[in-house]
Image (cartoon, rainbow, N blue to C red):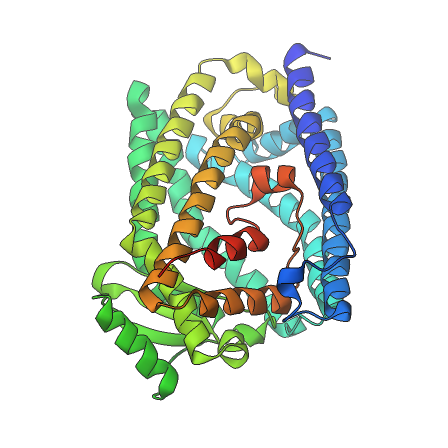
Length: 412
C-alpha cells in the first residue's frame, strides 16, 4: 500500500470519526426537561416529538455516513477510480470530454448510492413525523430536473475549468476563480427567474393586512422590493421558511405558504425585518466576499496539487490528469474546508444576532420575533438543546435559546 493511499484513507476515516463523535455528543445533549422559555409554545408531547425527530435524523445520518464511507474506501482500494478513468479514456476523446465522462461516471455512481437514502429520508422519516407532502411523481420529477440542470449548467462550467487548466498555464487557477465567481453571481439573477420556478410555484401575495404591513414596513425602512410572493412549500413539506432572492431593485421576498398559515401578520413582518437586517447590515456582501476569497484559495491549492502527480497513486490511478486531480483535491481539501467553515459559521452566527437586533429595534417589538422563532422551532421540530461542539462545527445560526435570551434583553 503506497504512502499517498494511506494519507487519503486517514483523511477519510478521521473525517468520519469526527462526525461520529460530534453526532454522538449531540444525541447525548438531549434532555427530557423542556426549557422554561418554551412553556408557552410547546407541550410535553410536542417537545418529546422534536427530540425523537432529532434522534431519528441523527441516527440516519450516522448510518448514511457509515455506508458511504465503507463504499468510498472499498471503491478506492479496489481501483474504482482507475476503472472509471480507463472506461472514459477508452472512448478516445480529448482531455476535456474525457474529463466530463469521468466526472459523469462518478456522478452516476454517487447518485445511485444517494437515491435510496433520499427515498427513505423523505418517505419514511419525514412521513413518520408528519412533514412529508412529496408525492412519488414530484420526487421523480425533482430528480430528473436536477440531473438535467446539472448537465446543462454544471457540464459547461466544468468543461471551462478543464480548458483553463489545459490551455492557460501557470495562472489557470486565476482564470478558473474569475470564471466560477462570475457564474455564481450570474446565477443569483437567473435562478429566481428560470430555475426556481421549475420546482415551485410563486404567486404574488394577495392584497390584505399582511401585504399592507409588509409594504408599510419596507417604506419606513426605505427598502425597495420588486415583489412579495408566496411559494407552495406545502407541495413537499409542512416545514416553515422564508427567504430573500435577487439583488438591488430585483429583490423579492418569498414566504412559504405554510409560514403564512402558521404565523400572524406581525410575526411575519418580524421575520421579514430579520432578513432585511442582513441586507441593511451588509451581511450578504460580507459573506459573498468571503466566499469569493475561499473560491480563489481553493483553486490556488488545486494548482499546487497539480504539481505533485504522485498523489494520483493514492487513488490507485495509473495515469495523472487534470480532471482526476479535481476529485483528489475534493477529498484532500475536506479537513481544510472544515476549519474554514468554522470561521465562516462563527461570523454567520454573529450576523444572526445582529439581524435579530435590527428586527427588534426597527419593529419596536422583540416579542413578535421571539414568538415567531418559537413557532418556527415547534413546526420544524428543531433541536432546542444542541451540543456546543456540534454548534461550533456546523451551526450557521445560534441555538434558538441563545437568540431568545439575547432578544429578551434588547432595549428599544
